[in-house]
Length: 186
View 1 (cartoon, one colour):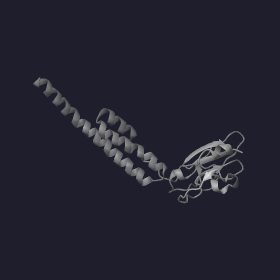
View 2 (view 1 turned 180 degrees about the horizontal axis):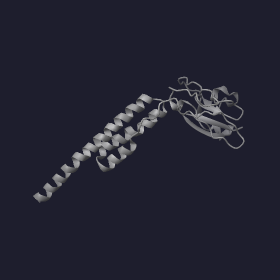
View 3 (view 1 turned 180 degrees about the vertical axis):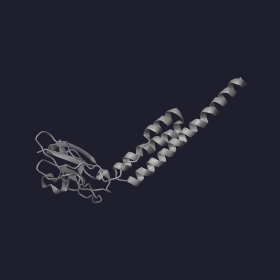
View 4 (view 1 turned 60 degrees about the vertical axis):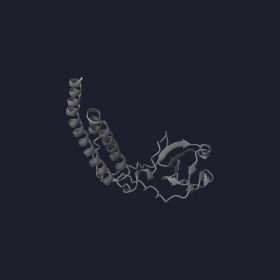
């Protein structure tokens, strides 16, 4: 029998039983194989006793049962806590659960990544790097379900882009002035 595993937010598979024993799985892993309606915790499958190590972890709820229309998705839980959908191989039917935000959820705030990169290259490197870091945080926080955190990261990233451009505007004239002063004094 082939098993798909979701362990620490990483989905992989298919694996044979012998391969599972060598993977160092914990009791927090989720498993799916053909014939199961949905993902199951590894501890719920008797044939996998001895394949995993018991660990003391906070209880993570089982992913929501998918609906036919895919309209209801559990929100408010971090994205990583929901097992990812394994890739189907020919002839297999698998449960449909993609873990992505539903259409009812707010859209992702702007990342400002393009502005952060442009301002870093053309204006001021140190403050531009901070702008890029905040721009990258936006999508990560949104995927984790932290909409407010994504909005804050978007706003802070935008301010760092503005600061980078202002630093560049101030630096260029001062740099030219200092350069011309050096040439006059030599």
